[in-house]
Every structure is written in structure tokens, then in C-alpha cells.
Amino acid sequence: MHSALIALLVVCIALTGCGRGGSRAEDQVIVTGSTTLLPIAEQAAEQFQGLNPGTSVLVSGLGSSAGIEAVIAGTSGIATSSRDLKSEEEGRGLIDTPVAYDGIAVIVNPGNPVDGLTTEQLRAIYAGEITNWKDVGGADRVIDLVNRDEASGTREAFKKIVMGDAHFDRSSVVLPGTGQVRDVVSRSPGAIGYISVGFVAPRFTSTLVKALRVDGVKPSEETVASQEYPIARTLHFFTKGEPTALAHRYIDYVLSDDVQDGVVIDAGFVPVTARDRL
Amino acid sequence: MTTPNGVATTTGELTLVSRQMQVREWLLAAVFFLCAFVAVLAVALIFTFVGYKALPIVTEVGLWPFLFGRVWASSEGLYGILPLIEGSIVVTLGALAIGTPLAVGTAIFLSEIASPGVRAIVRPAVELLAGIPSVVYGFFGVVMLRPLIGRLTDGIGFGPLTTWIILAIMIVPTIAALSEDALQSIPMGIREASYAMGATQWQTIHKVVVPAAKIGIVDAIILGMGRAVGETMAVLMLIGGAAVFFEGIGSPMSTLTSQIVMDMGYSTGTHRTALFAMAAILFVISMGLVLAVRLISRDKE
Image 1 (cartoon, rainbow over the protein chains, first blue to last red):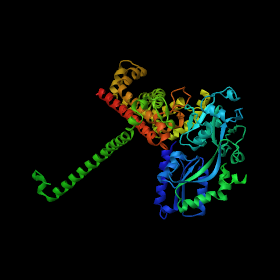
Image 2: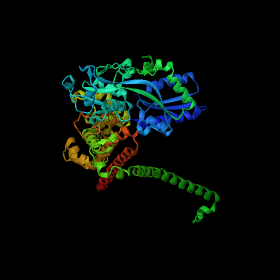
Image 3: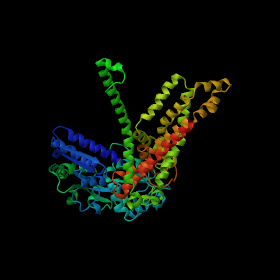
């Protein structure tokens, strides 16, 4: 998306951070990556800085791939990622810390009579083989595909879990963020999109979207943590080698009950500890 | 520093002042030369850098498969930019088709018809359009225009039509300001001669003033075209980002500029080279447009 602008912004913020008197490199950690993880990373950072005056945790969302690349390149301390490492990213000395679970909800306009799809139907829809809602039990209306950009970890996970070897229909609209997908789907009667379960419920806006059952399972925290819901994934923090002292404290804080039972749940994700509790 | 004529040497102070002046004059000339040189240097550096980064495309993808490949799918290693070139052309021509009549009409109104009072309101308003950041246009388009177009085309509303309308508004100030300059540069005597022959105002505009300013107006349109081809942010937000050929005015497409921005955050290897090659193509297009303006303007002289 506008990653370059954001990257520039990050650099600017980082530079001003460095320039400020008294703020040394070891008091600062840069966290870059997934837009899905942004609410967790950001709110945890705010609270962490409140508890640890003088430290600075700079959080930005550029997409998982950009975050991982930044950590490999050493320009960022922690990468937040909503996908596992790709083969070419493995063996680069990245250490993985799972911080939450996330399900990807398939969303449609609330006016759409369709309530559920199978993974198979979803694949055919996103491959462009099924193009009308009437073929999956809905009204006679063209299906407007809404996809994410290729830097998106959500797209990566959706492709891996749902699409398999099939290719996305290239004529679908590509939007650069979860918020945009949600907004467009909520306003377009024939649209279908996918976003994290945590973003299905209305937040600051009042527009509604409807999450579909996939293979008969409704996406919820329980079904995501129990792995009943088929389109689910693990959210990661990656560091290059052992994290710096400050990064380590920040990660520990993210894993603490304060964040896991607070921000993580508030953001609609499932805490890492949830699977142990099942 | 010696002065050849005896005048300056007669008093020491005079020589001193004139030498200071000479140094100052020389320094000023150097400073202004430096200013001009920085611009030239920047163009040369950018051109060299983009060209250097783009060149491997010839061996990695091949010039023909790159320029005329019909599929852009970086994840599958397919780097054909024909759909993107088509997207840029569709977006630019559509915006020009809507924007040009609007802009030239504005220029004629401002230059030939409007009373000074009206002009004092309309001209700043048009100039203000040029000052609005493109992301604001894009945001306006997404929030206000897209749902309307979506209802109209029975789709989502991303695509050429939405982009055309917003882009047309964006290029109006460029074309209008330059066209107005061209119209203003036509000597008053020509208009007076036309009126003296008994021509009406419309006849004077239509048969005399506009034909006389034709070259300047064409220049203005070409520069507006340059703005449309290069516009990135608003197009990115409205076009839909689907790298496919034109399927309808309400179906998403993608352009060279918007694809570069969308991909550059995560591209590596050949993908990145392809983006630089697309940048090089945009560079060549804009050079071509500037050259066209120069050639046309030279014809005038």
C-alpha cells in the first residue's frame, strides 16, 4: 500500500526519537509489520511506555512481509507477523514468539441472504470460477470480490489455507487494509471479503458486516482457539537472534496476562494461553 | 585586479569598492548557476539511477515479455505490464476527455467573458484546486463518489469511471491556468478587429481568439496529460488495483504508478527491477510529453 510513505514516516519518527535528548538506542525498540497485529502492538506499547518511563516503543504497520524484511535488514527490532515464515525467510536467524491466535472471517454485506460457504466454494469464488451469488444459494447478483494486497499477511494466510494451489482471480479489487475491506463490503451489496475475526464487530463506525459460517463453523474465539474453525492462524513476533533487553521486556509484557487478557481480547483475537485452557 | 582605464586607479577607495562589487556579482552569478545546476543534476541522477536499476529487466524478463506480456502476477513470476500500460492510457485519456472541456471552458470564461469581479472569485477558486493534496481528492473519491458509482454500475465502485471524474477535477487547474495565459497573450487588437467586423462575442471567441491561442491550449492539454499520467495517490485509492485489461468503466484496473506504490513496500529481486523499469517507462513518457510541448511551441515561433 502506501508503505513507502509509512516507511518514510517510521524513519522520520525514528530520527526524531534519536534526536531527542536523553533517548539512547537501548531505550528504544522499533516494531514493524502486520496491520492485523497493529492494535495489540500499539496499545501494548503505550501501556509499556507508561509503566517504563524513558523507554520508547515505535510501532508501525507495513504488512508482515515488510516487517520481516526490516528485521532481517536490521532496521527494525521486532517484526509483527500474521503469517509463518516463508521458506526463504527461514534460516535467517529469526526467533519466533507466538503472541495470539487469529481467525480469518469471510464477510459479506448484512443484506446478503447467504449464511455459510464451504472452503471448496470459497476457493471457487476467489478463483473466479463461481461469479454469481445464486450459484451458492443466494440472490441473482454478481459476486464482487474484494482482495488484499500481496504484502498482506491476511492474504497470505487466506491463500495458504483456502486457495491451496488455486490462483486468486486477478480482476478482483485489491485494497490495502483491513479497515478498507470491511468498509467497502459493508456498503456494497454484492461484495465478499476476508478480515480478521477481531475486526468483524463494529467499532468506531456503525456499519455492519456479516461473517459467514465456513464448513458449518461460525468464526468465534472458541472455534478459533479450538481449531474447529478452518481459517485460523497464529500471530507472531519475530526478532533477529536474541532480542535486546528492551525488546525482551516488551515481548514479555505482550505475553503477560495484562495484555493477553486485555488488549488481545479487546482486539478480538484469541490469547496464546487460550489453547491451554481448552 | 587592475583596471585598464585610468579612472578607477585615481582613488584607492573606488578601486576597492569596484573589486568588492565584482566579487559579489561573480558570487551571485555562481549561486544562481548552482541553483539551476542542482535541478539538472537531480534529473540526471534520477535518470541514471532508475535506468541502472531498471536495466537488468532486459536479461531477467526480456524486453518483449515485459512490455507486451499480458499477465502481471508478481507472486507467480509473471511481469507483463501491458495491462498496466493500458490502465494508464485508459485513466489518462478518460480524465482528459472529461477535464479538458471543463478546463478550456473555464479559461475562456475567465479570459473573455467574466467581469473583473467574477474573475476575482473564480480564478482563486480554480487555483485552490491545484493546491489540494491528491490524497484528499482520493479520500473524497473513496468516501463520496465510490458508493454512487457503485450503485450506478452495479458493482463496488472502484474502477476507471470513479478515477476519471476525480482526476478530471485534479487536472482542471493545470489546463485552465495555462490556457488562460495563452488566451491572455492574444493582443487586444485582434479582438477589437473582430468586433469591428461585426462579429458577436461567441464568433470572436470561436473563430478568432481560440484559434489564435490554439498552440498554447494544446501545450496546456499536454501538460495536463503529464499530470494525469503521473498522478499516483488518488488513482491508487480509486482504481481498484487489479492488474487486468479494461473490463468496463466500473471494473477495477491498475496503472503503472499505482502498481509501483502498491508493490514497492515488499518487492525484491526481479519484481523490484520490474518496478524500476516501470518507473523508467513513466520517465520516458513524461520526457516525451515535455519534448512534444517544446516542439509545438517552436512551431509557433
